[in-house]
Structures are given as structure tokens and as C-alpha cells.
Image (cartoon, rainbow, N blue to C red):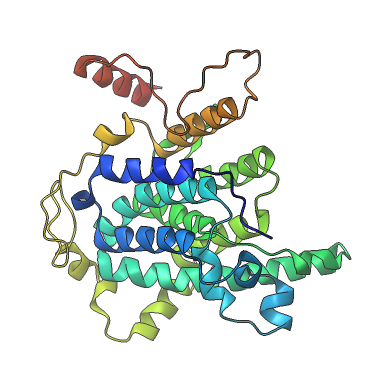
Length: 313
């Protein structure tokens, strides 16, 4: 496994553009720090990808346990980094302002390691069930497993509503499962087991014993207490002890009023268009990769009407 380089890292440029659109002062500290770490290690990787990716062979048999720490924060190419970090931006802002920076950072750290362990268990099980030892050699990198776990947490702490994934409307509670299948079908090279591991770890936290185990490990850690978290809750404007900025809680300015699934669908369609896969498209004109919107500027009334129509469906 080697990093795929294609000259200019357009994905990295678009990611930085997204970050500055949101505004550094509007991004909570743990989310911003995690994003910065991933970008830094993309530019200055500690080791080649073959030395950091996690697999049953390298992690379990070779006892190279440091890969559990390194694999989540290294990425195969700039687009891999772009999609993961834009997703982190969305989920991190919502969850960190709900849980507080200390607890959110604790969750990120535990999930990053635990998902690698669950991933190896899944690959080991697949190798045994299918009698195919190649599964033990599958080596994965990237933050997407953690993002699937955070998606489960986000749906748990912000229940209700529906999501639109590739034109299919589904309850947000089950959206991660449909997204798991959709991503694997659209991008067969992605790690199905890695994404599934993220969902399972998220469920272990929301429905299983993981939250209690983390609480017991943390001892008298106050941020597992709802009343303690409430003091740091971002309500309308953020007022966090380690995050002194006053920032508006409405991020529709930066997302065009789209949900995360709608952003993902639009980005994926533009991705295919960018690569020349759009059906019936013979034009040489290329749209920007990512969250593309029509060139005309919608009025506030038109944006409001679109949002109301989406909720009425």
C-alpha cells in the first residue's frame, strides 16, 4: 500500500477552504486539533503507509501494536483525507458542543484504538468463515471507522428525523447501515470491515457496556455526568472554558442548509462528474469537487422555503 499522489493535492486545498469558510474560531478545540493532526500527518507522515496500516497479520501476529494508534490518522490520498475531515468537521462541531471537549477527546482516543481491535477481530472471523487467509492481510488506514462510530453517537444524542442517502430516505437511526452499503458499492476499494467496526463500537457505547467501562476507567471523571456536561453545552452561542469564542450555533451558512447525507450525496455525484463518469456528459467543463452549488445566489426567502419543503416531506 502506497500513497496515491497525483501532483497537486486538490482535496487538501478544498479541505482548507472548507475549514476557513466555517472559521477557525467556530470549530471546537478537540475537533480542530484532531483535524490538524490528520492534515499534519498527511503532509509529514511518520512512516510509509505499509508501516502504519492495521491488519491481523501486522497487528496481531507481528505484535506491531503501534499501528492501532497510527492507522486512523494516516490517509491514502488527498481525497481520502478530504472526505474524512469534512465529515469530522460536521460531526465534531455537533458532538463536541453536546458532550464537551474533554469527554469528546476521551471518546476519540478510545474509539481510535478500539476500532482497530474490532477491525482485526472481524477480519480474523472472515478469514475463518470463508476459509480465505487473505483477509488477515487486508491492511487499512484512515479515520472513517471513527467517523462511523461518531455517526452512531450523533444519531443517539440527536434522535429523530430522516436522512437522504443516494435518493433513499431512511430513519437517521438506520442511516449508518445504508451508508455502509452505499459507500462499499460506490467505492469497492474502501474497507467494509473497518467501517463496520466503527458502527459496532458506536453501538457498544450507546447500547452496550463500553460507556460504563469508560466511566469506570475514568474514575471520578465529571464529564460523564449530564449536569457537568450541561455547563459546557453550546446553546446558540458557544461558551466553553477552553474555547472562549462566541460562535453562532447555526452552520447552515456553510452547508447551504443541507444535511450531512445530502452533502455526502452531492459531493459523491460531483466526484463522479469530476472523474468523467457522469452519464451522458461529454462536456469538458469541470465543476469543483465536493460541495457544489449552482452559481446563482439564492435569496434568503428561497433558502428558507427549501428548508421548509425538506422538513415537510
